[in-house]
Image (cartoon, rainbow, N blue to C red; front, side):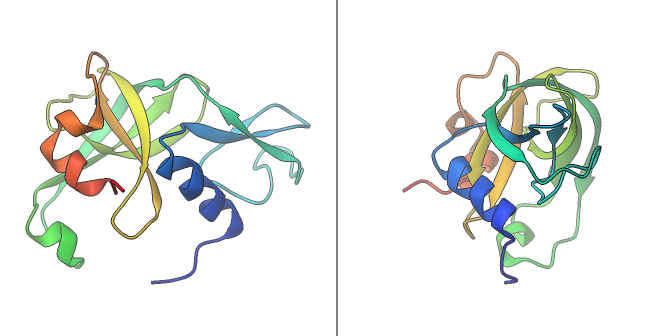
Length: 142
């Protein structure tokens, strides 16, 4: 596995704790996704990890039917999608099977089986990642 960038590693550490935080530019106020070293809007390197409201809207969804990674091979099809986060950016996330485009979603952060930080999207009324069998398997539980 390729080594993670410092920003991706910092996100993964927060995700392991279940913290939904994104980098926010101290100069222009833009939130960043994915984690990065400089702001995509103003190029400042002053980014601060900031808790966000874990809400958004599912813009688009697709199902993957082929996987190269052993983890996913036995779990196909696997749903992923793009979410317009309430804080502004569009993020990609692993999806609960019961979501449709346009649905309000609740975002959770976790570390996957390789220790990478990921976002998952659940129905807005969902209680926990653990309630979805596929997402429960995806997230690392220590």
